[in-house]
Amino acid sequence: MKELVKKLFNYFLIGALAVIPIVVILEIMIFVKDRVSDLFQMVYGYADNYLYTLLVFAISFFILVYIGRKLVQEGRSWVIGAFDHIIERIPLMNTLYRVLKKVVNMFSSHDRTIAKEVVYVEYPKDGVWMTAYVTNRYDDKYVLFVPTSPNPTSGFTVIVEKSKVVKSAMNIEEASSFVISVGVDYGKVSEISQLP
Image (cartoon, rainbow, N blue to C red):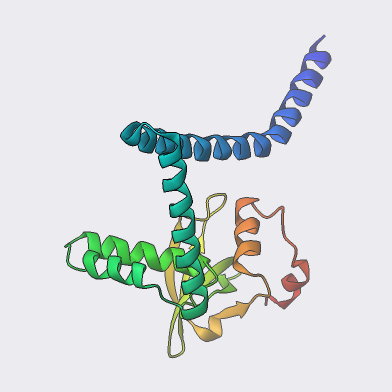
């Protein structure tokens, strides 16, 4: 009887762990649907007209497409520039906005001024290697963000000599997947041999 309970509990844990990624994705989808639904109800509650609500959403969609196109083609949009100009004059908000914008731009593909390299660095001590995002460079120094598993948005910011890092062929997405999966999703196993 004890073996049966053990076996059932083991199967339960394996099943629960197998379903976790599905549940997380469903939760994200439900969250996005709820936010869009709330926005739709807010706009509809203001106008009390479905045609007006759909028109607002259609115009919003085309404005976002226009902004995205301008950012890809020219690297700047007058809409974003105007908002930047306004936010620059609000104390505290300007700092938060500037930092948040830089972090988001680091992970997006349209900003070429921010480094998007992934490297290995010995951290927190020699012989222990971690992946890190290169966030900035100054002469022979690298500013790195070292993410922690399984949440890549938390971690440490360190400054190291260029000679202390080993470049990786991973891109930001692959490195984030590596961190989130706690090393299970690691497509660059051949890079391990490059580490001293």
